[in-house]
Amino acid sequence: MQNRFIDLYSDTKTKPSPGMRKAMAEAEVGDEQKMEDPTVNRLRERVCELLGTEDAVFLPSGTMANQIAIRVHCRPGDEVMADKTAHIINSEGGGPAANASVMIRTIDGTAGVFTGEQLKASLRDPASRYNPRSRLVSIENTSNGGFGTAWPLATMQGVAEVARAAGVSLHMDGARLANACVKSGTKARDYAACVDSLWLDYTKGLGAPVGATLAGSKAFIQESWRHKQMMGGSMRQSGVIAAAALYALEHNWDRLAEDHDNARHLSEGLANIKGIAIDVPRMQTNLVFFEVTKPGWTAQRLVDACKERGVGLGANTASRLRAVTHLDVGRKDIDVALKTISDVLAA
Ligand SMILES: *Cc1c(COP(=O)(O)O)cnc(C)c1O
Image 1 (cartoon, protein in one colour):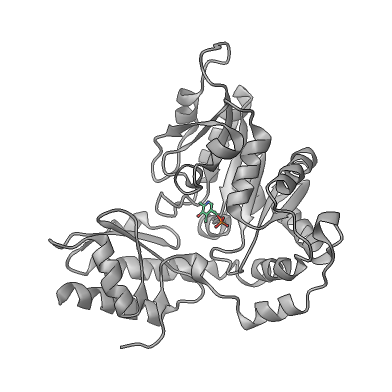
Image 2: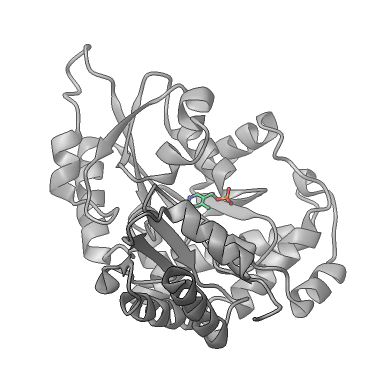
C-alpha cells in the first residue's frame, strides 16, 4: 500500500513546484489589460520568439484561446474543418456554435492527423450559395483524442498548402505543442510557420496552474483582444500567473522526454497485464489509452477500484481508459500503478 495518490488522470493534475511558486511570489506586476504588466509582456515576447509570430496575448485558458481564434477567423454560418476527435468538437461545451455560430465539418483522420488530400476532399465549392463557406482548418498537435500523436511536419505543410491555395485559414490547438516538439524534434517555430494562429497551454505537461498564450499576426492579436475583453478574459495583475508560465517554459519543456519514456514504460507494462488490451506503438507521447477486456469489467469499474487503492485513471468510453504521465509522477509511481491495476484485475 502506498500513501501518496498517484494521479494519472491527466497532465493537468500537476501542482506548482516550490521553484515555480517562488517565481510567482517574486513576479513584478501591473495592470495587464493596460499592457502594464511587465511579466505578462515578457511572456508575450518570449512566446513570439519561440513561435516566430508577430504578437501574442495571454489568456486564462486554452479553451478561451480556441474560442477566440474561431471567432476572429470566422463569420456566422462559416465552416470549420477539424479531425473528428478534436477538442473543439468534443470538449468545449459546444463553444464554436455558441460563441462563433459556425458549422463544423469533421475529417476522418488517422490518430487525429489528416492529410492535405483529405482536407481538399472536405472543402466546399466556394461558388455555391447552398454550401456553408469553408473558412478555417483546426489542427490539434499533439492530438489528444488521437493517442497523443505528434504531427509530422511534412503532413502539416501539406495541409497548409491546400488551405492556402483555397484561401482557408489555419489554426493550431497547441495544448501539447511542447510534447509534439520534444517527440518529433521539430522546432515550435517550424510548426508555427504552417498556421495563421496557434496557442500553447501552460497547464498541461508544462506544469503551471493557469494560462495559455494565443499567437499570430499583429492584426489577428489586436482583434483577439476585443474578444478576450468581450468574454471576460482580460485580467489585471496576472504577472503572478505569467511568472509560472515563464518558469514552465524555461524548466519544464525539455524534461517532457521523461514523461514520454514513462508513458512507454506504462504502455509496455499494461500490455503484460491479463484483461488489458493496448496498441503499444500507437502511444507516442505522454497519453496512454487502453481497453479493459476482462469479462464483467467496465472502464469506470477499473477507475473506481484503482482510485480506492491510490491510483487515478480516466474512463473515456465503456471500455477505454486513459492514463497520462507528467512531472508529478516518476518511474517508481508508474511501477506502483502497474502493480495496482494488475492486482485489481487479478482479485
Ligand atoms: C486541455 C486541452 C484544451 C483546453 O485547454 P484548457 O487550458 O484546459 O482550457 C484544448 N485542446 C486540447 C487538445 C486539450 O488537451
